[in-house]
Image 1 (cartoon, rainbow, N blue to C red):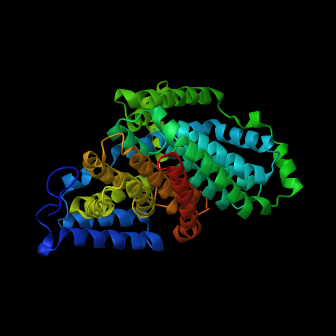
Image 2 (cartoon, one colour; image 1 turned 90 degrees about the vertical axis):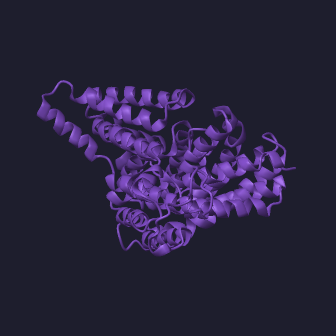
Image 3 (cartoon, rainbow, N blue to C red; image 1 turned 135 degrees about the vertical axis):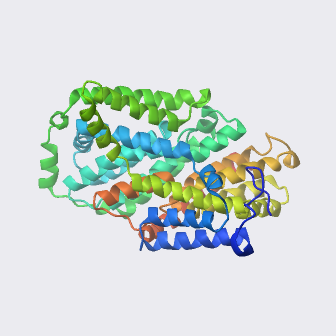
Length: 452
């Protein structure tokens, strides 16, 4: 059996009927993806059944499957969903929506660019999953008021969230993995990936304006009605808003400070949610407390949570069976130790694979493979371009499909609940070519900055 980057055998030795674990795992993953893409069945159900088949057929056991779940991501999602769910009762998102629209004077073209820029900036300062959870409800409210199709706005925010997240250590999970493994600091990413993020953001803003922005039409009546709104009136619970802002500020501080002190974002978000719930319930009796906690936890997108859990287990089954290691090793062997060739190949292959398979497990597999080549390629300093290529490719590649990055799935989930469902194939039809175009820009950046 193939070696496993996490240590131990690549698969449990009890695969049913003596089937090859790699082939078995690959078939299960491909069938599951086919159903997810077809959208004939609920994606959470598909991912969980696929993970179950991995276990029942012997590709891995339950203990191994649970090891594949990225609980930092799961805790981050649950915590931030709960915080956002409680906070929105204060009316703050309506306040931001109205204030933003009035600042833009209800101009949809300006609004498309403005919301994308806000998404990118906050994705760099927080993380892209949290950001879309805050921005998407505002976007849906604005587009509803202006009677606009929300899809162009949501599409642009998916791209902006992954581009912005690429700019910093904490913005996107692949960067967290790479930074932790290699020892990159927050400022290392600011110096090396943030310039590329700025260039690519400008590129996609022009693109979005060309295909959507210039074509928007909103009547003066709708714009005037929006301009007549008073933002302050949207705030229905100022004390709750104050509590929420304090907790969110502490959570953001925890994201920035905690990363270098052993505190994962998932733990920070989960504790932040618990603290906000405590501030809301402490003055009530047990029954009312239970009711409010149930309300808060009811705001969590449990379908999305279980989809992620199933997807993590599915991909980990393929990884443990040795397929990702095999592909990664073949990729690196193919370059014959040429750093420039390796960096470009890692950039493009990371983009394509991250669009198909979630970029987190892919990056986790690539890291030890690149490290194994370090001595042969001149040491740590010599292979720095390869690490930046991996970051650029994985973060941008997440824009290639709806399941390519966590932020994408969150946007799709919010949109579906609002009756603005985003089709997997519709997104990929434009998203994948545009992702390839952004990788071409990243290629030029990589060549100019590191490989000349």
